[in-house]
Amino acid sequence: MKFGTKLVHEQAIDQQTGALSIPIYQVSTYHQADIDNPPEFDYSRSGNPTRKALEEIAAKLEGGDKAFAFASGMAATSSVLSIFSAGDHIVICEDVYGGTFRISNGLFRRLGVEITFVDAGKTEEIKKAVKANTKAIFLETPSNPLLKITDLKAAIGFAKEKDLLVIVDNTFMSPYLQRPLELGADIVIHSATKFIGGHSDVVGGLVVVKGKDLAHKVYYVQNGFGAILGPQDCWLLMRGLKTLKIRMDVQQKNAEKLAQWLLEQPEVEQVFYPGLPDHPGRSVHLSQADGPGAVLSFKTRTVEQARNWMKNVKLAAVAVSLGGVETIASYPVKMSHASMPLKERERLGITDNLIRVSLGIEEFDDLTEDFGRAFRNE
Ligand SMILES: *Cc1c(COP(=O)(O)O)cnc(C)c1O
Image 1 (cartoon, rainbow, N blue to C red):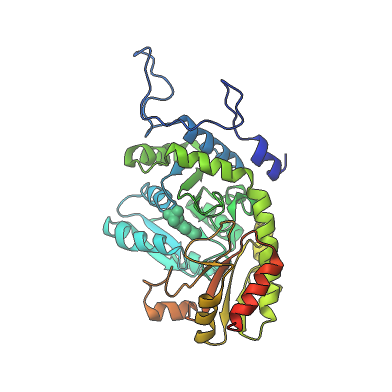
Image 2: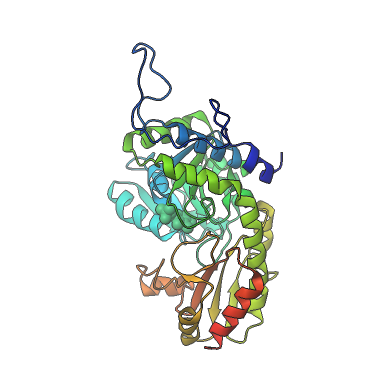
């Protein structure tokens, strides 16, 4: 069955009534008719039928064995990192999501987990960073905000030789465009706040794992640490998932066309998008993903042009986040990367003429009319 059909037909329906959506089981506890035989659900931190339905469809879509829903993408990431112990070493790509950078550097380092950040665009750099106590490699591709590509197959091949876990934050691609578990990764993380929810109305996270051992470890943290997603938000994510493919198709088409259009604008100096023919990671990306996605970045020739554009633009929300049906423009130096030291930002190429755009489902001609006007300061 193809992905778009799975999205609609592999979600559970309510067995009792035939209802085409699993009800929102707004409940904390469950009557136990026979105390010697505990029922499947006994307390909603440990399990909830609405959450279970979301977790089952998430596991199917990523090609994993088990999935877990969390209160946010960061709750998902923190819970995954909590399966490691003091003295373990993890190699993380240096342009990982800002929140992941913050907790791995600030919180998990304090708890004794060793972390090394590397330029994962170069597989050699990953190899060089691995030590005797290395337990995992944490990757994110394409990266944020410059859409750099990591060669997943090369990194996973190397990790297998060394018996290391590979964790991939797959938020930018969604399971429709990239399924790292099928390439041999062990754990996939999503900020479901983005493309999976898709409507800028819910914060949530998902973890999908391969194998019983990892499923057991992540469940232990989900149930014990307790950063679970509530039933209402689980329902919203299942509803969002039904239209993931059609949203992504339109958003990606808009991104492909916008990348071309931006290249033709006199105010634009450079465009970063894996769909462009001269993007350095394009061939690697297209060998591991089914499309370039719906997020791109560009640099204007002057800082003033970038600031003016952000001030004038009407058909993009100027905001953090991405993946919604509405186009969202963000300004990394003041938003996602504001806490990164200037020197580090400059080394990575995150400059103050850089704008990131997550394309929505608007009609393309309306976007370019508005964006052109915003450049011309009209
Ligand atoms: C937003 C985001 C996160 C964090 O997710 P939240 O739902 O905001 O906690 C993690 N990784 C990536 C790539 C993201 O874009």
